[in-house]
Length: 117
Image (cartoon, rainbow, N blue to C red; front, side, top):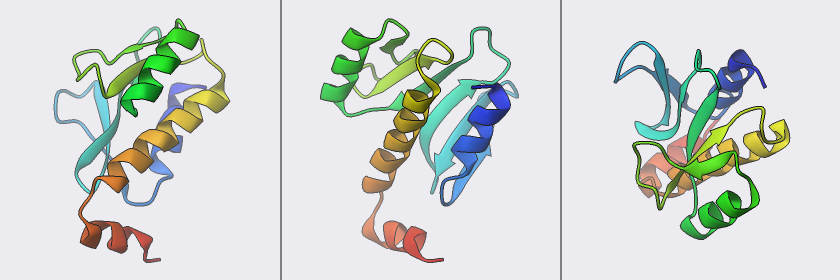
């Protein structure tokens, strides 16, 4: 997965935005103002930090050396994934799971707005 493919996939989700609150190098992908992915698209290696169910986070770290506790994030709820060292399909699934977790935590009124076309 290339940096552009990563960016494009994150922006495919309903109401997803890309912001740069920290500096121009760090892309922060949000839904309704809540972060679901962070990445330095010019990073070498390319990594992406994603929200994750705590039990699933531990399982993923045990199964993949390229998935580690979230860098500079709550290690219980965030993983950092080295793109290219795990299958692209898994990266996409983890991004989607992160988005879904964040949406599930939104107030009902905001979730309902997301469901509208």
